[in-house]
Amino acid sequence: MKQINTLRHKIIQLLSRLEFFKSFPDTDKQLLVEGKGMIVLAEEGEYVIKQGSVDPTLYIPLSGELEVRMTNQSGKEVRIASIPPGETVGEVAFLTDSPRTASVVAVRQTVLFRCNRVALRNLAPTARERIKDQIILKLVERLEHQNRELSNKGGVAKPAAPAADTETAKQKKASEESVAQEGEEKGDKEHQSEDTK
Image (tube, rainbow, N blue to C red; front, side):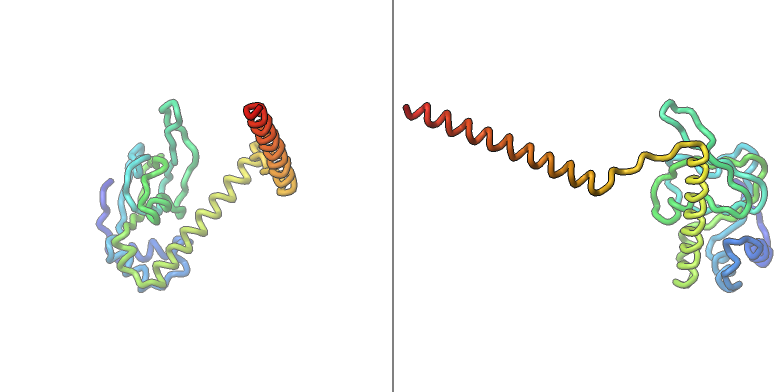
């Protein structure tokens, strides 16, 4: 990806338009930009994130469109989501330093805001918390959307057994084990009495 040299005040203006940064004061946005937050350009077909890589960077598309892809068990890349401008990408690795769980590719030329851990560390604790809160909110919204999609397709997960049924099953198993143990003990006593004869 190519870095776009934009004046800091222009980047702050761009960030101010995003829902993600609406609650942030300009001073926090300025610290974020000064702390290595930058604007980058991804060309059509270019990978922004590669599945399995370790890169704790958060991306927010400002224009264009991104596509999330995962490699399935047969090794084929499968499209799983589309990311429009204003959404976040790479949140999990950004927060946890874990390997990327999916790849993200630019569907067409896309301008992104890129924020790494260094930029996050330069912020005041309250600003870091705001970013984390916004990431959590975005993740919850995405999860709710995926749940709705799954239920609309009829792919409802099998519910766990009710607690009462589970307890009954545990009691039955314990009872069976107790009977089996008593039988073994009785058999041992019979063998002992035969041995003494």
